[in-house]
Length: 214
Image 1 (tube, rainbow, N blue to C red):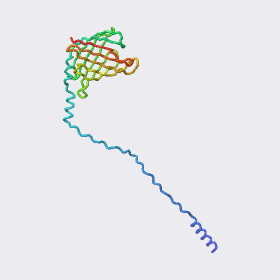
Image 2: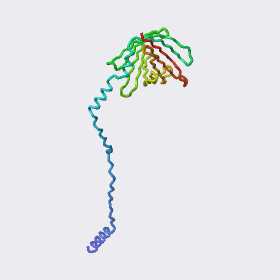
Image 3: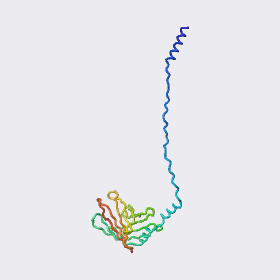
Image 4: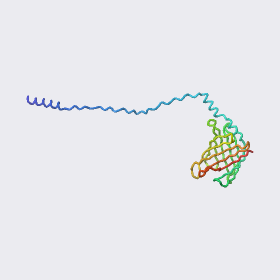
């Protein structure tokens, strides 16, 4: 019995001495923030209400440019000449334009009625002077298409003319082409409008309208 007890004690001592301690290391992963840091918006300085009100009042009030636009109110006979290609044969047509000011004298509207190549022609144009940008904007639509021509330009007092630039889509190619328009005050009862297109990289006059006030 003593021998058995001694053997068991010896076995336990050997087990304890041979046992290895296993250490578990805890790995701490860096925290990943799921929020995105954004910059705080800079607060705009409050606008002065009186200054804002005056700016809008000035923007809405017709000025000197609108006066000469109003001078064109009335009925005009228009002799039109078209060139379909550089140095091409000119085609003639005629129309009558009725011009009026609309929306409290802020915009000019012109309605054209006539014939082009024997077909009935109707057209409508608007002219605006933007008091904020100091530019003119001209638009034109007619019954011979579904597009609108929009040109933006400025008036030169020294030449008594305004030059507009814009783009139109060629129905045959589907591409945008630039155009240039020059509108000249010849005398109090005469106006001339010249349209220039680009073909094969070369600018040429494609239309001229000589307007005579009745």
